[in-house]
Each structure stands twice: as structure tokens, then as C-alpha cells.
Image (cartoon, rainbow, N blue to C red; front, side, top):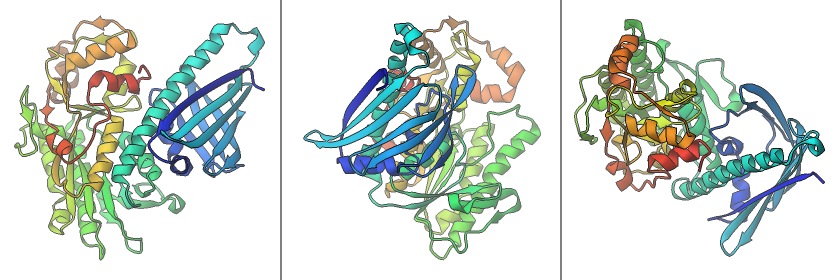
Length: 458
């Protein structure tokens, strides 16, 4: 018997068998990894049957280490168990138990563990392990609960879906959400494809994309594009940003429009930057594009999908806000560059940020895939935008770091030029009425609880 024990149990709005089946599907582990931990799946062999293995790369502060897990028991619909083969613990056994109750399915995560040299360690070490497990499993159960509800609404039948940008921040969160809902996901890649992983080669610059001979797709989700926030906005960088969006979107739209069996829907990424710097005005989907560089990029981006629209494919332009995730994007940069505190704002700090948590982001994508009423431009952001100063203050409060003086606008423009004016000092406040009226239910509509969950401080 291991020396430490931990148990976390919750009820879920489904049957025990449905909950068990969710855990059997590809992407289940990825959906449950806490976003605040720098953890990723390195390789796996099998699913949850005895003999299946998975290797994780984790970090203890800045130091990486690997965790090798082995599945040893599986009773379908009732339980499965995995143990640590190699890792930081002297012993580790994790049993997942499923049972039907009058309150729905009960999931019990039961862990027995032993620490190296546990008899010599102070009791505070074991208490820290217990607190860490509490944070992790609170997040896991909350995410699983919301995913189950989302799939009950939006995953009513399995779909075959083609996506681009699968390895990016959005795509790496979206793919496991789709596969745990029972959907079959294919990905476009620019390297030699692995057909066993449902990969298809494409080269937008050369106009190369061949979908002939493949089974028909129900939907296409296009997320790929050069990172607009990486590097200075030189003339060459700006052209790469435009070309990556126009060439890729146009190639996909023309290709699927020419298929003998066309997909029912194309979801094409865009951004709330379409509206430009709109101060404190609340922008709707019918409002005109702004006059900024990002506005021009978004306008060209959306126009490139016209062949799909003309072919009768339901086309949704996802005007995405600032996606918050510790694993990438704006939030990751803020966390990495603010080890001692957060500035009070960029410039005045009064510019609005239309933000959205990563789980609501991918949830809204699945909703748009399912909802036949949604088409054309759709603002995908949380319903409660905040100012830059409010964002920084909330981060400082949650992480208990001091607020530092604001970064002067002049310094930012000197360092980053036009990118600072549009990305850091410009603001955009959008309404999400169209998304909400179509039936989407936000998991975290307010900033503070969203950040607390993403950062493990709920």
C-alpha cells in the first residue's frame, strides 16, 4: 500500500458508460491536462487497455522531466487503472471508477502514491502534493463536466472534419475537444504527412492541395496563418501575414468548392481586428472594417473564402478576440515577461480588449460547426470585454504580484512601431449577441473566474 492517498469525486450529467467512453477516445488526456502546467504528451501506445503506455513531458520549475505511465486494469464501463513506470514518485497508482447514481454518473479518481524517501520528508511536502492534486483534479472535473454538456448539445452525430493550424495554440486545444466528442479529425500539414494520423500535405504558396480519393468531409475549420504578433512589422513581415491568409484561405475555398461532395460548412478564422481601433464603441458584425493594417488583413482574409460561399457552403468568419491561454499567445507572453509584477497598463491602459478563454474559444468553434443558423461574420469573444488596465490589475491580484508603473506609449511605439499602435495601444470592444442568440452558453463570461481557472487559482 502506498503511503499517500488522494480521492476526488464528482457527478456528471450522463451515464457511467458514456463517461467511460469519453475517456477511451483520442484526446481525452490532452483535454484534462491543466493549462497552467507546461505538460505535453510525447508519445502513446494504445488507449486505456492493459499494456497501453503514455509518456508525458512535465516541468518542475524550469527543469523538464518525463513521466511514463502504464495501464494495467480495465473493466469497460466500470473502471480502469494506470501506474507510473518511471517518474518522480517512488510509487503511483491512479484508479478511475465510474458508477451510475440518482444524481448522474459518479467519477472517482483514486490515487495512491509514495514519495522518494517519504519517511525522511517533513509533512509539509505531502500537504503540498495534496494541494497540487486538488488543483489539478478540480480543473479536470470542471472541464470534463462542461465538455459533456457541450457535446450533448453539439456532437449529436459523429462528423469527419478537416482542420488547418492543428499544431497551433487554438488547433492543439480544438483537436482533442473534437475527438473526445466522437468526431474524426484530419489535419493539413506542410511536412511529410502521416496517413495513420489522418494527415494530408498542403503547400499554400505553391497552390498544392489534393483531396481526391479521400472520404467526404462534413466540415472544414481553417485556423492557419502567420503569427501577426511575432517579430517586427517589416514590409516583408506584413506581406507574409497577408499572403499566409489570402493564399491559404483561397486555396481551401476553391478546393472544397470543386469537390463532388462538398462539406456543409467552412469555419474560417478572422479577428476582431477587422474593426480597427474603435475606442470604446461596441462593434457589431454588420459594422464596416477599420482603416488599420490588421483591418485590411482581415478584410482580405474573409474575401478569400468567397468561392466557398458562392458554391453554397455555409461559411462562418470567426472574428476571434484575444484568446487567453497560458500555453501561448498574449497571456503566455505576459506571464513570461512579468516575473516580478505587471505594469498598470500599456499607455493609458484605457483601450478595450475583447478577450476569450481558450476553452470557450474551442467550445464556440464546435458550436458554430453544429449550428446551421450561424453564417457570415461572428464575433467570438467573451461577453464582458475589459480594458487593458483591468486585465493587468486582475492578473496581479490573482497571482499576488505587484502592479508596476504603466509602460509609456512612446516607448512602445519606439520599440515596436506600428505593431505597438495597433496591437498594444489600440483597442476593440465587440458585442457577442449574435453568438449568444444562436444558443452558445459561455463557460466563463467574466475575466477573473476565467483567469483563475486557467492559472489554477480557482
